[in-house]
Image (cartoon, rainbow, N blue to C red; front, side):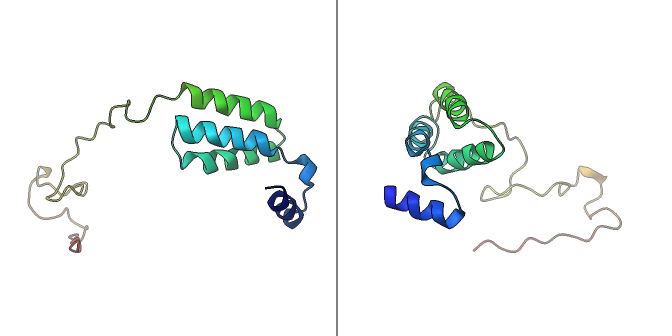
Length: 121
């Protein structure tokens, strides 16, 4: 890891001494295990953006670690409400495609071309 950090730091014009590898790895581990695995690299990036804008790395890591610790376990949140009409196969129906959305007419409103979705295949 030290060789990679040194090489990556040199590539970016940074000093390896300024890189808090343990802090970033601990934060990434907490997010991966308590939130979502793909959230780990994204959170590390967010931390880097905040630090690049002048935030203290330890403060950023502490706040994000606390957020990850308070995050509900995967699968414990109900799915978002989505009562929009669906087409066969589960695709969402395009807005305004139902006749009742246009009154009693079955054709698209004036000035709007008819939309034809390509087949899924």
